[in-house]
Image (cartoon, rainbow, N blue to C red; front, side, top):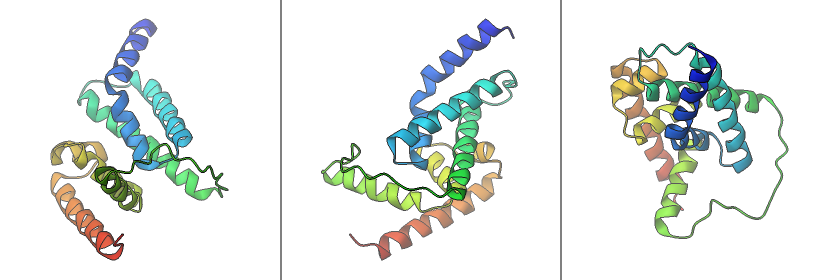
Length: 164
């Protein structure tokens, strides 16, 4: 593939799947700057991997796999470093209606899961089939089913212990 074709394919993929990439990044951080950094890392990895994409799987599956692997890798690196958070008294993600509070509560519970479980629940929340989830994260469909059951149970227990 020539370079011009790669650039056109890359632009099209990013345009069509920008919100999907941001959704994955947002599941790994609530900090706007960090989400943007993750997004950039995903774009770099998509660009690097584009010439090796053979079309054996759906572009969406390939994109999710790269996005999740990038975010999981960055999450692991972040946990190894000591961070001193800057505190700003403004939170642009805060809404006051009941639906927004419930979504925020669910996001807080999901963020307490390990990166692999977080990836699985994110894909499930994106209405992906168990087959697609398995293909993206590299496990069997049956294993997806078992893990999702356990993740949901974990989330239920978390909701029972943190009555707000």
